[in-house]
Length: 192
Image (cartoon, rainbow, N blue to C red; front, side, top):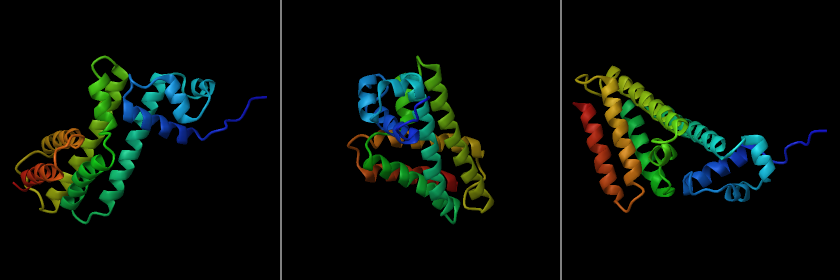
């Protein structure tokens, strides 16, 4: 008779994601994962196959969480400008609350050059973020909040690049004031 799982798969996946987020892929050992996740090594292999697959599933879970968090804030925004301000604020403040940066950025910097799977996951995450930004920019153009001088997809790419830079800079001792000045400059670009 097959044994039932003695753990919540989603819960242990979140723990793995946290450890990869804190330490990176290469610095995280299987022994550390087993201990941190609170499961047996055999269970880890049966459920997640190997460390690499677990890391990729962690990236997927991170993407789902980020999408959910951003959507929750955007839903409450009454204007496109408010939605973008929320994204910038979330990026700056969340990084200061959890100085782990963005797991997609971390994966891209650490692994993308030599790991096609990690590169694909990070690239897909970045593409979703750019798509979200483009939709918000289109919303702002329709409501006459933003200038029509530039193509929305081009603006989304530029804004996404700014957000990625802010995620990296927020991990340093650079002041929040400077990060908010950078965000404000990006917003002014939309006004034309």
